[in-house]
Image: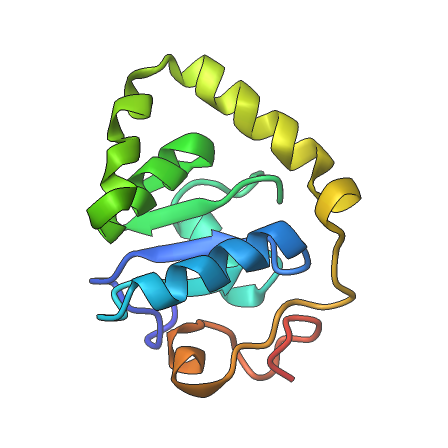
Length: 148
C-alpha cells in the first residue's frame, strides 16, 4: 500500500459520484474540527487499493466504508462507527446500533439502491478544496477521481 495513506487515522471510503454520499462527507468535515477522518472515493485508485488491503476486493459501490487500522466497517456499521467517533449529539444514535444488523442494513440498502434516483449523481467525483483537500487520499494521476 502507498506511503501517503495514513495507517493511524480512520478513512471513509464513499461513492464519489453520489450526491448523497458527497453530502455525507460534507456533513462530516465541519463536525470533525480535529481532522481525524480522511476520505477517498471508492472509484479511485487509492479506494480500490484500500478495499483490496482489507479483503473487500469484490465490494460494490453501494456502501460507505470506514477503515480503522485492520478493521473495516460497511453499511450501517460504518455509519454508527462514524457517529460514535464524531461524538456529541451524534453519539445518541448509539442505541440504534443494537437493532439487528439485518434490519439496519436492509434500511441502508433501500436508501443506497435509490440514492441516484432521489439525490442524483455527478459526472465525476467531488473535488475537495481548501484545507480539507489534504484529508482526501486521491492520487493526481487517477483519471475520473476529481483530482485531475
